[in-house]
Length: 195
Image 1 (tube, helix red, strand yellow):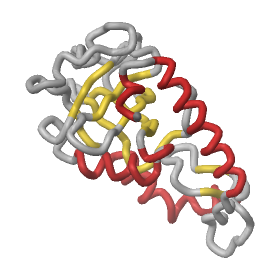
Image 2: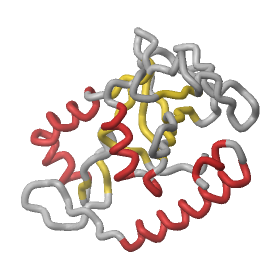
Image 3: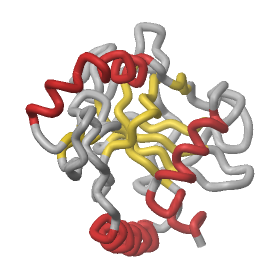
Image 4: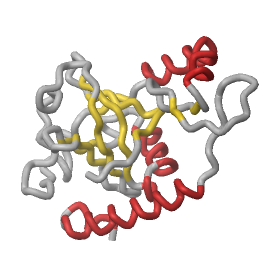
């Protein structure tokens, strides 16, 4: 059933809607993370806006914890997984929902984005032999990749499987490097979106 959503927009919308409802309920039931500032035990309601990996109860606690958090924050922002599109095999000419070549990425940032400028990508993962699909919101940048074009493929798929909605997709910050390689910031997932 999950593979059907790649080829049928109605099935995709139905599955996405159900996943959003399930995730929404889970988020409401989830226990709030505690504040990451030393000595504070209040619930954390605000995320670090740079790495999105820790919570704070207030701006004051975030400022107080910055010195100890800065190193981890910078590591999260510099540890990226490089992704290149498939250039051979069965999926190199995969067609998207609107008939476009889903693997037609030219190695440039989408739209008006510049090299090294961040944007959001959605990566869809299906266990088994299918490659991952990666695209931006407007689908100006679409690519298919697998273990042959992403050396840390298993690590990225593990993040999606354990932290993404239904273990099948996740949203990440990404950028295109000067080498024309997509760099995915995999340590901190972005909130799920409706695309």
